[in-house]
Image (tube, rainbow, N blue to C red; front, top):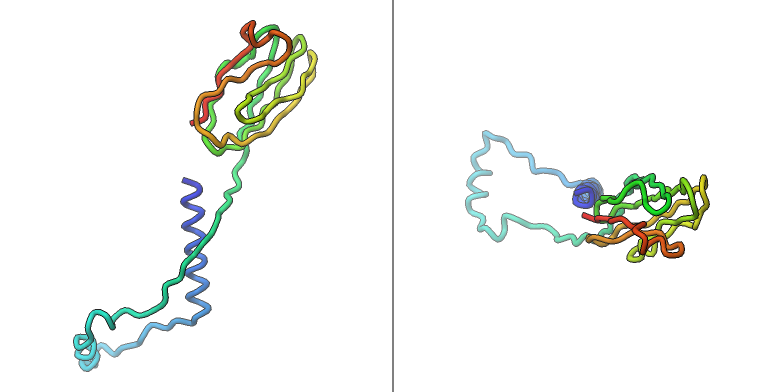
Length: 155
């Protein structure tokens, strides 16, 4: 929706600029002048519309605020087992270890925090550019196999 709105705004700005640059003036007619009506009715449809076709190519980048997720890990679980974001969101994961040595990883977006010990934090930023369901996990030792996993849902 933001992308469509951005494209519409850009198209309106370009059309307005073209209009102003070409100093287009609407014909002024006297409503009492009957000859104008006769002249208009004598014209065929092909001649009533004239102008140029302007092709517009644009790529609009809409800056939006990132989705910030604060998540913590302890032996052997995360405090959230599900995270939901929208496709195209820039996601910031702020990960904190509350005990033990852990990290936060999601392979499909090549996103991983640093491994941190209890009381320390690390962050990772990525773009969720593909809808789907993905597993996030702790890559330390056998933590993943012991259940330190969750689900990232990109809608």
